[in-house]
Length: 365
Image 1: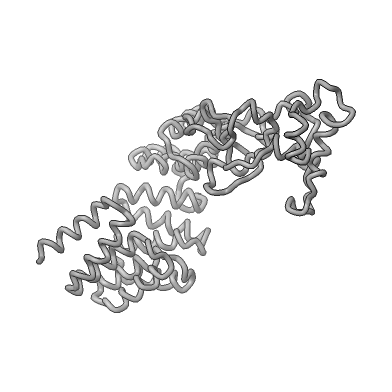
Image 2: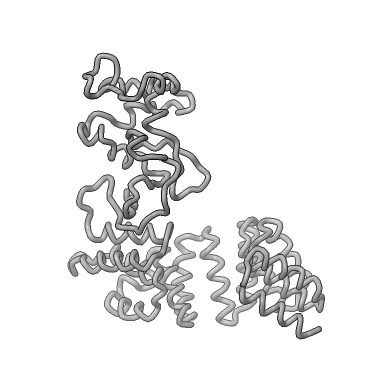
């Protein structure tokens, strides 16, 4: 388990960082074995139904009652009374997490509020310094690289992070460059969008990166890299492997259909998308693309129905809105096309595609 570390911002944390925050507490630094999750939490009982005394009794062992005066709470009695002598209310306040907005959770770093000022008024988050492992003191170079790749894909794709992942992968000795290392290398190239670097990797590891040897996600990422250089025929073999291993992945099925279209297999693409919307009737991108292919076949009514279903599921889906505007232009209904584009630009200001379509409408008047 890895968590990010940011420059000069030790009070930034993410939703899943309770153990890490607890370990940063002065109490735990002095006595690392003094407290565990189950010291306060019964795994079979909701926190909403757990009395405050359950939490505070852990504090009282060192800081309450007959405890040494040096470790007793220093807050004035009036302040403690205002909080009903609830240690957690002062020393583990509710706070926001940096990864999920509008959610307030208990900060598990036990500390004196006055030492940090206002918990709720933190300055902008500093630069990302690195990733810290919570459950392994010295993770391997490959594990560190994998952690960076997962973090970058889920949170932020900064160049420094890509460089860190690359550096860790290069630290793996040649004798340890196994299938997991190759998967990570492909993942890195996929995030960097570097299709030209794929060819030498595939030459050096032809056996392990052959379509039949790849995992589903590695096959998918190789296919995406191949598509970036218009090698759609070879991409099809990797997409077939991805779909074979994960047949219910809507994303993989969609990519397979789009690749068929690029290979001029329009009927195959339509059939795949028809199966996909039946298999996953809430998958908006399938409707957006199926509608477009129907329009290419001059089946405007079917296209309109697809766009209607997509916008019912996601009224702001950008590709569907643009496709719907294109359909209205095809039907020579410029006012309706313009209305859709105005709506689109309110949601996505400055989009070049929408502005180009509006300009096309103006020139046709």
